[in-house]
Length: 540
Image 1: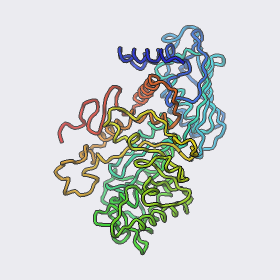
Image 2: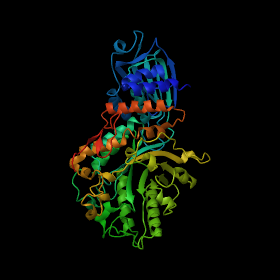
Image 3: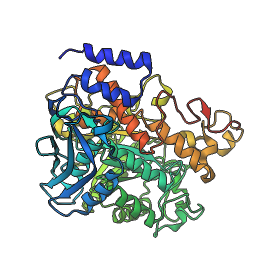
Image 4: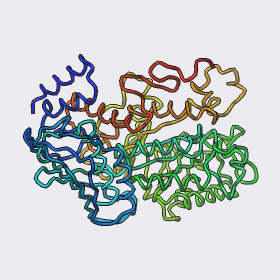
C-alpha cells in the first residue's frame, strides 16, 4: 500500500490545525481503505467503499440481544450515551444514504466468568443491504468491546462512506493492564472508577491494585484493625469500597488483581510491629522472617483476608527491592517469599511476584508468574520456564514517561527469541506509581525532608483536601501517554505507518476527552505539577 496519502494527511493536519472532526472526514477519502478510526486497531477489516450508499446511525438506534445478560444490558445503557446520533441525511450524507436502525448483539457464550481465559473476541458487521449492525461476541465482555468499536467508528462522523464493514478482532495478549499505586498516595474511589472507565475504552482488562507500600496499608482489615486505625475515612478502602470497585470493574470486563507488597516496602505495616510482625531494622522497610514464624503467620492471615475480597485467580505478592543485613539474610528472605507463594497456591490462587524474587532472592515455585520491570525482560523469565508480564519501566512507567520528550513508544512486547513459547508472555502492564505525591520522601525519615529540600514534587497533594488536584494530575500523567501501549498489548502491527498510528492515537484521545476522562488535553504537556503550563498550585 502507498503511504503518500497518509503523509499528505498528517502534513495537512500539522499545517492547518484541523480538528479531529475534520481529520475524520478526510480519513475516508485519503487513507488506505482498510483503515478505520478505531483504537486499538482491529486485527482484520473488510470494507466496501460506496459514495452512493453511505451509512449512518439512526437517531433511534434499537439494540437487541439474543441472550439476556446483565453485563451486556449494562453496557448498552452506557454506550447509548456515547454513540453520536444526528440527522446525518441533512448534515453529512446524500439522499441515498442508508439508515442503520438496529444493532443486534449475538452472544456465542453467555458465561460471565471473568478470568485469564475469558474470550474478548468479537465481530462487527454493518451492512447497507440489511440496514443493521451486528455484533457477534465470544462472551458478554467481548460484546462490550464490539460496542466500543461501534462507538469509536461513528464518533464525530455519523456518515460512513461504505456500504459494508466487517471487523474481526481479538487480542494478542490475555493480560492488558494498569497498575495503580495506592500504598503511597491513596486514590479516591471516584478516581478509581474513572481509571476503570478509561481502561475499558482502550480494551484493557486488568487493574493491578497496589494496596500497600511505605505510606500505608490502604485496605481495612478485620483481623488487624490497627493498620488503618490512625487514618481518616477516605485514607483507606473499606470492604464496601472494594466490593464496589471490583463490581464496577467486572461490569466493564476488567479483572482486579490485588497486591500486598512484601517482604520489602513494608512500612505501611509498621503498626503490627512487636506482637504480630518483626522487621529487619528500625526503618520498618522490610519484614523479618523470624524463626518462630510470627511474621509468616500474620502475613498468611492478611492474604487470606485479601482472597475473600478479590475473586480473581491471581494475587500479587510484590517481593521487589528487598535488601539483606545480618538479621535478614538472603536465605531467610527467599524462604519467606516461597512460604507465602505456597500459601497463596494452597488457597487456590496463582501468585505473581516482581522479577527480583526470581533473579535476586532465587525463589523457585512452579506455577508462579513473574513481572519484568527493570533489569530483566519477559524473555529472561520465560527462559526460566515461568509465565511473565512485561512492564519495563523505561517504556511503561507512567510516572517517568511524562518527563521525557515523547509518550510510550509503539513497540512489540513479544519475546525477540522466536524459539521461546510466546504463550508464556501473558501480556503487558502500565504502572502509575505515586512516589512524587508522598508527603515526604517515601513516607519515611521525616526529619530529613521536613524543609522540603529534594522533597517529592507534589508532596502537598498528599492530603485528601487536594483530591481534585491529585486526580487531574494523575490522569494527565497516564493519558494520553499510555494509549500506544494499550494498542500494543491488544494487537501490535508493525506495518501500521507512523502517520496512521499518530492519527489513531489522536482520535481515541479525543474520544476519551469527550467522555469526561481527565486526560492531558490535545497539544499540551502535563506532569505532577502542571497541565498545559498552568500549575495546580502557584505557591508551595
